[in-house]
Figure 1 (tube, helix red, strand yellow):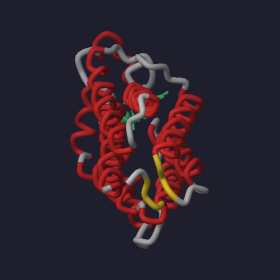
Figure 2 (cartoon, helix red, strand yellow; figure 1 turned 90 degrees about the horizontal axis):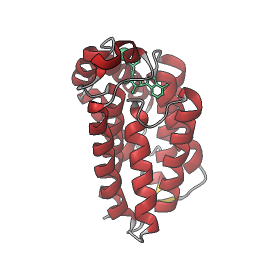
Figure 3 (cartoon, helix red, strand yellow; figure 1 turned 90 degrees about the vertical axis):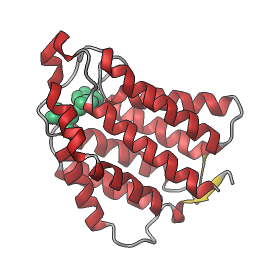
Length: 213
Ligand code: ADP
Ligand code: MG
C-alpha cells in the first residue's frame, strides 16, 4: 500500500514513545560526555507524560503527535523541550487534515518539522545538533520521491540517511548549545540530540512501514 489511515496511526506514536523511554539511559550518557547528561532523562520524562495522556488506542497519528508536541513544549525544559515540541507540533499540524498518510503528506510533515526546528534554534547543518540527522533524512526522503520511489522504499532511504547524519556528528565540533563550550574537545563524540532524532525517525519509519504492508 502507498498510504495508511491517519486514524490507524497510533502504533507509530507508541513506537516513538517506546524508543525514547527505552534509550533514556544511553541518551543521557551520550549527553553526559559533552553536555550535562540530562537529555535522556528530559526526553523520557516528556514522552512518559505524553504516554499517560494517550491511553485511547483510537487516537489518530496527528492527535498523538499533537499531544507529544504540547507536552514537550509546555512541560519540558532544556534545549530539547521546545525544539522537539515544535517538531512534533509541526508534524501534527501538517497531517491534521489528511485522512490518509502517504509519501506526499509525510514529506511535508518532515519538511515543516525541519523548518520549525531551524526557525526556533537557528541551527545549520554541521553545527553538531539534531538538525544534522533531520536535514539528512528530509533531503533523502525528498530525493527518493523525486526519483520515483514508493513510500516504503523512500522510508528505508530516509532511515539510512538519518543514521549517516547522526554518525556525521561524531567528527564535528559543536557550535550550538551547551556542548559548544567544549570547542575542539567535542570532536570525536556523537551529539545526543542527533542520536535521539535518529531513534525517533527510525521508529517512525519502521512503524509506518508496518502499516503499509
Ligand atoms: P540542554 O542542552 O539544555 O541540556 P538537552 O540535553 O535536552 O538540552 O539537548 C541537547 C541537544 O540539543 C544537543 O545534543 C543538540 O542536538 C540540541 N540542540 C541544542 N541547541 C540546539 C539548537 N539551537 N538547534 C537545534 N538543536 C539544538
Ligand atoms: Mg543536556
